Amino acid sequence: MDEEAWRTPREGGRTTEHARSVPAAERAATLPDSVRLALWFSAWCEGGASLDAARDRIVAGDAAHDVVGLPGHTDTVPLILALGVLRAERASGAGLALPEPGDPTGLGGPPAFNADALEAGEAVVLRGVDLGLVPVRAGAGVVWRCLPANEHRQVPDLAEADTGLRMALPRAADELAALDVARWRPQVADELMALRRPQELPVPDGMDPRAQRMLALGTRCRAIVELALADDGGALAAAEADRRRQALVPLDRAARRAVVAACSAPFGR
Image 1 (spheres, rainbow, N blue to C red):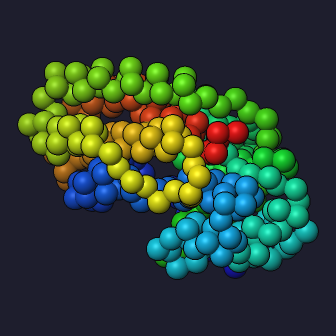
Image 2: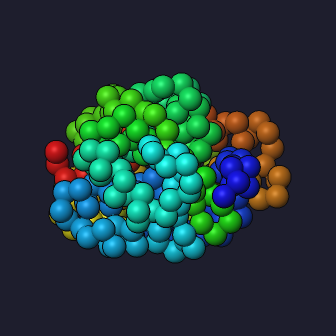
């Protein structure tokens, strides 16, 4: 496949029609590409899932997933074969990165990998080998770029991430209430109330219960941030949008760190 055919820009911001029309809980249940790959590749490496099951869970509802840039391969490789190649390279699992400008959560370099991950907003960092994978949407499918990536990186542990998210959430709720966001976006108030209800996500059997809870809460908080920042056809004034964004930055950062922590030690190891 020609590289330029699939290197498409990252979808801009969090102001999509998807965010305006789909409940946050439903969006959270559809896990990002890198979350699915990190969890299910690790599950396969741990013996908790078959290769076919891991491939199916990673691809989910997409048409296909392929990998380019694998060591020793010049062509595009189907995902199910690529997972085997990565195991042969001694990859023993995977972690997650969810970087944003000024906050490279989950990244350890080198600069080229960090830049691609930042553009995508997500990436997978493999354990046992200095390689990483960055997803790029290509029509109804995904092409993963395999790049050199430093395995050793700083990621928050579950306890730290849990504390950070539980501190950020009420503060963000207070800020949104002060900005009267519910008047313009009543779904936000509904979704904040719904956070108390448990949510099941499509995760591997044997995933650490604390990590599952953290993943569920983090993904729903990220979806709420997306919903709160959605702009109905440009109706939101620039100053108002900036105030909302500033109010939600701490929650978004805490939610990303929570998801990274959950996916970087999904089986308690």
